[in-house]
Each structure stands twice: as C-alpha cells, then as structure tokens.
Length: 220
Image (cartoon, rainbow, N blue to C red):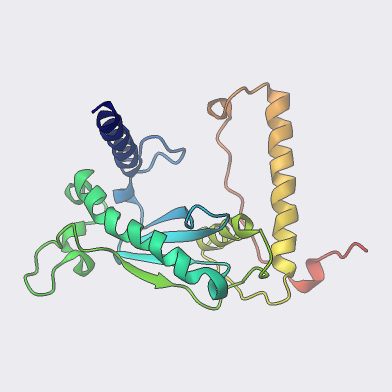
C-alpha cells in the first residue's frame, strides 16, 4: 500500500541521516565517529518534557547516562536509552565504522570482542549502560532539564568533574551565563546581517572554570 511505501521511505531517510552523522556529514563539527572517543547525545524521555545526556564511550562500548532527575524518572529514561543501546551496533556496522582504523583499530578492542571466540561482537549485542551517580540534581518540580544537559556536556567536554552542587548556586550561575552568551550571539549575528547558521564564522570554544562561592553575586 501507499502507506507502507511512505513508511519505508521515511525509515530509509532517517537511517541515511544517522549513518551520515556517524560518517561526519551534516554536523557542525564535521568529525566522523571513528575519529573521536565520546559522542554526546541529548535524549528525550518517552516524548515528555525531560531530557538526559547520553555519552557514548566508543572505546568502552558503553553508554553513560547523566540524568538530572534520577530519583523520580530513572525507569522512564531507561527504555529510551535501551533502544539507543540496541540500535548503535547496527548503525556502526552499516556506516563502515569498523573498517576505518587510522585512529583506533576498533575490532581489536576488548570491548568489541566476543569473550569466547575473540571475534567481533554481533550487531544484536547492545551497548552496556551505566547511570552516573552523585551529580547535581534539579528540584523535583523544576523544568530545567535542558539546562542540566548543557551543564553536563560542558563539564565533560572540558574534562571537569560534575559536582553534586547541593545548594543550587552553580545551575543558577550557568543559566544566567548561557542566557548572556545567547544574547551576545544573537546580537552579533544581527549586526553581521547573517540569515542562516551557515553564514556564521567559526566560533572559538570557550573554557569554563568552576566558580567559587565568592564569585556569585546575590541580587535581592
């Protein structure tokens, strides 16, 4: 039927898009997966307003989940992450990931070998999953999950330890910082007359240093 044909075409397009991302196409970084150690993926949970950060550690064949609301929503997240863990091996195989060994010889890593035969694991074997504990958490009624995903990604990319931050000062500080950066970015873009993201010049990556308590300014 036409409905079946449309569905097949849609699946084909989505699969092609994912494969192209793995090969380094269609993303600003323009780096294929076989040249990096970790891949950061924001994951929406069950179609609801909550996001977690999934970090795919390719060297360890592991997905580490950074969840800002572990106590109340962990089980819902697990289903989405489990789907990701099952689909990754097939897409890596289809994209030619294991054939590109100029940076890392992926098939020779222990994480990708069958412990009994020593051969490459079958594509039906999912990635391992690990939920990261003792990291900063949002309040139960908070809707700032996307902020925490950005915080986790920034800390990890700068190789910083994510603190528990029990008092909540750090997320508030970073919320204001991100808002200021977006305002500056939008202002510069407007002044430059850009009409699309492709017109933007390359932006240097800023380094983040964890602020001390003395760095915070309280406005009453």
